[in-house]
Structures are given as C-alpha cells and as structure tokens.
Length: 368
Image (tube, rainbow, N blue to C red; front, side, top):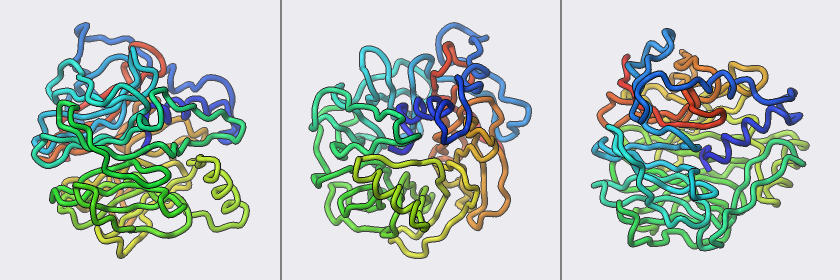
C-alpha cells in the first residue's frame, strides 16, 4: 500500500507505540477535528492557512470515513480513491467528480483494495485487491512488533471498466502486487511486487505483459509515480545496511510486514537506470509526485515533528535542495497529486473533520 486508510489509522495508533516514544491519543487528531463552518454538504470551501501560499480556496469533496489516495483522471474531471465507509469494513475503490458529487463504488465490495488509477482515455481503471484471497477484510497487524505495515500476499492488480464492471486480473504471481500507477505517455504501468522475494519496483504493459524489474537493492522500494514526460520515476525507499536493521527487515518481511519509520524519496529513469536518493531526512517520507515543471517533487513527511505524529506536504528539488514546507495544518496531510493540466492539486487531510481521525479529499488551485 502506498499509504491507505489502514496506514493512517496505524499512524495515529503509533503515537502510543515505543517507536515514536510518546503515549496517549495523538494531539494532531484532536486539533484537526474542527466542526465544518460552511454549508452542510460537500463540496465545502475553506480558506487555507495563511502560510499555505501555494493554495487557493480549499474544496472539501468528502466528509466522513477514511478517504485516501485520490488521483485524477487523464482529463482531470474525476478522481478515483479508496475509502473505508459504511457498509464496508475496509478500503474499497470509489470515484467522484472533481467538482464534487456523490462517491460511487467501483470495486467488488469484498476483500481490501488499494492504489487505484485511471488508464488513458479514462474508460478503464486499475487497482489492487485481496478479494480473490477471500471476501472478508484481511486482518490488521497488532503492535507486538512495534509500528508495522501489512504486506498482504493476496494483493493482485486488476483492470476494470470505469463503472467497475469487467474486472480482469493483471498479475498472477505469489505474493504482494500493488501500488500501481500509469505513465502520462499511456504505455506502461509501474508497481511494487514481492515476486522476487523482496519489495521491488517493476513496470509492465497495460495488459500485464512484458514485466520488467527496475530495482533490486535489498529493502523496500515502492509508491512509484512517473514524471510528467514519463521519462523518470519517483518513489520511496528504505535500504537497510546495518546487520541489525537487515535482520529486522528480512524477519518482518517473512511475516508479511515492514517497518516504515524511515523512508526517503528517490528518483530513477523509467527503465530503472540512474537511481539516486533525493532526501536524507531520517523520517517517514512518502507519497512523492512530480511538480508539473518536472524539476521538483511534492511529498508528505513527518520530518518536522520529533514525535512523528504531524505529516505535512513539502517541495524539494530533484537534487535534494530547496526543501520547502507547503502545508501547516495540524495532523495529517498526504497523497498530493497535480492534475494533468498542472493547475489543480488534490491531497488528503484530516483538517476540518466532522469527527476526530477522519481523513478527507481536498482540491485546490495551485499557485507558484
């Protein structure tokens, strides 16, 4: 998972775990749970924090539940996202107009889903799901091993029509296949897989053929997105080098778990060449996406909070220079993506929540 609703819940739960060296409910969730001040139903408008100089008016498209990983269609008119909301016990895939409207279910309603994305032409989507492994939601790990993510072996990548019909399986290998996104060129899917025994990044044709391995260093490589020209890929990674860290990583992986407390942002060519580390923040940095100009990366990180509970959006140059904080709202801000025209940004946040702990989808005009 790139950072699904289950991960956001674990982030808040981690406030009580030793890995973040604090206890009690996260203060960020309480601060962000302010009552709506505009009309009763979304979309609703809010002014950004005065320090959020890149944002125009914020439009809140969802209100309630745990909504995450909202990504634009190629024409910019719709978003596809995952949400835990009644009557479903875990994430399912929904779509919503960018202008606002009622979310519409696209996935099967069984298993757990993550990482949906439109295909060129917006007549089809891809997403990952565990539904072939069972109709029930897979178990969430406890915290006996600290703050960990589950890597469900039953995740595979599927293609479906934009109305959710005609589901076709694209991956059929043992282990985790997820975190899939599509090149702006419309020719390749990039994704994360355990098929070789480690969490690495692969690419494939839109029909699942011609699978190519792009990374092979020990550790987690995931959450990949293409650059606007399709020539590069940005991703998050953790490559343990010390013996104790390697043992911890490999031991957890055998149990279908990873520990994501330290992730850095990396960039590589679309064929896997020229891999280089962009950030060195020593924090949980994730959800990177290229700025429309292709010269910077926007991402989410808790690097600004020693407790690890505050996640904000940041901009950084491809060489790691010019780090700039973009959001300043208490709590969680993540999953940034620019619309194909480069004028609109979508992200997910627990600001202006009706209830503590909820995460909602926001869109705003981007100002450089």
